[in-house]
Length: 178
Image 1 (spheres, rainbow, N blue to C red):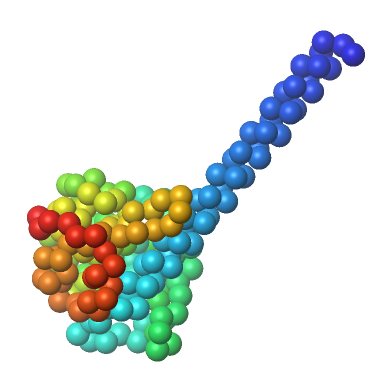
Image 2 (tube, rainbow, N blue to C red; image 1 turned 120 degrees about the vertical axis):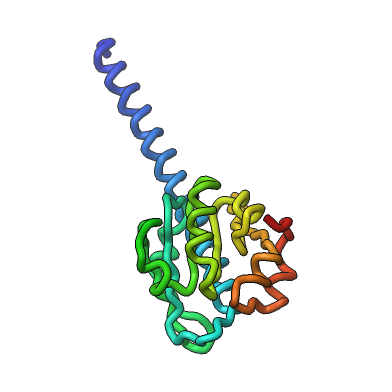
């Protein structure tokens, strides 16, 4: 066999292994996205708003890593639907078109700005970034290889205008107030 053929064969094998590794990473990310969606829908299912919406409107803001499955929406107990859509941080509709906000990897300044705009609304807030629970986000996901856990900021929950079932709060790890 010629050296050129051997190099081509080696390159083909390397490419095949790289594609396999990328596909395995994609499967892991899909599993994490599904686990994150299940956790978020679970939290939404045990949350009550003053107006009791029949369709819960969740708005996704910022760059996300685990929101793909969540963006498909879902159904909560009692046949309440969850409508999920992406919105820009500066979208004026965030104030009137969202019952909850799913924040991706927002930096602290962007989160503080968003939180200040939405403070007057009865709104559930969930983030992919754990640090945001230290500065006012109600729930922060902790996505791992073996599943999803979440943290909560009880002070933010108490001030939010929504009621979250105490059993959900017992499942969470607590974070301090902002």
